[in-house]
Length: 480
Image (tube, rainbow, N blue to C red):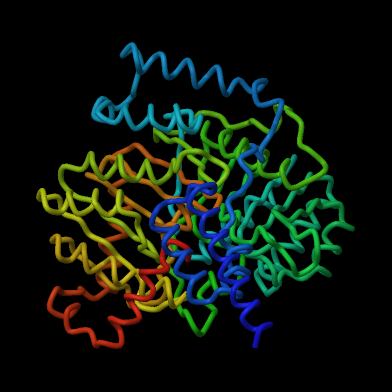
């Protein structure tokens, strides 16, 4: 009995010490702090293990270091643009966009996201079209192919792409593939070795020091980038796998949003890839002008904005909020998960209550149950504020898109949830052109035909069991 009491006393003491550490040293968001204290209180031993894996912050030291960044002229270009904006000498091709100069400035100051306005893009909402285009561009590659994906499967699409990349590597094209170790945990090691033998370089982001034991799995590189010869770039929500072609019976049709870009913005996508690659690989990419071959082509304004747990600021979230607060007519949002923090939720409620047409579209099926039920909890608050909510029925909605007033938009990898804002490494393209915004609105309105409207009355008819699941999921949503 004494031994049992000793163990219980030790566990209680240890939990108190860990709770104090979370409160005073980690300096987490208050909501997340309470969520972790609740976990430690109710499941003391297992809760500690969960905290080691999912609760610890990244080291404050910068994990992305690239001493040649200054050679690219990034810092000087950012400072030059900031001075132009501050002195009102910044020239914008479309005068209607000058009202968003503070959004340009926000991303410039907090993210070194240079604004370019000489880009051309193509929008993909269906996997077969996106991958047919990507594969064709890879076939035409002459110098290098850089791919970064959160998930790469060893299935039919994964094998098809891997075979093509090996062929290009044997032709003398420099092939580099970066995958997230957690997201691509089912990627065949045999296939990786085969690709490396062909001359392709393949690396994992945050691999474990000990096999199967990775204490960094909570911080995932959720970015999806492809850069071909420094001239063509892809960014958006599609990963590499058959399910993204709609072949998975569980999810059915896969609805996503992805961009193919040509223009100066590709240079900024390249910088993001190189920074990530140099963190993961022992074979750093050194500056070479051939990697920066993006040439002016088109008139779309764009900023490539990245965020991650290594940063002091939640850059993409701040960009979303700034867009929302600028809205005068409407805000259209598509997201598979809707778990906003108070700042973003309040921004949307204020917009809706002030007469802005706020429309949110979410999927009708979960790929993560707790996240799904937490989403429904937050959606209820927006319904009460007068927002319109659509439930996508055709398949699984994975798009991460926001459009404001037919002028500005954002497409990328960041969901509207705490994980994307604080825990994952993400990248989005912020877009400034009415034509592009209207194209995205057209896609949203097409999706409305395959969706059902969630009415206020229907929402409040939920069973007690569903409300209970929503309440529990919402309590732990800050740590999902």
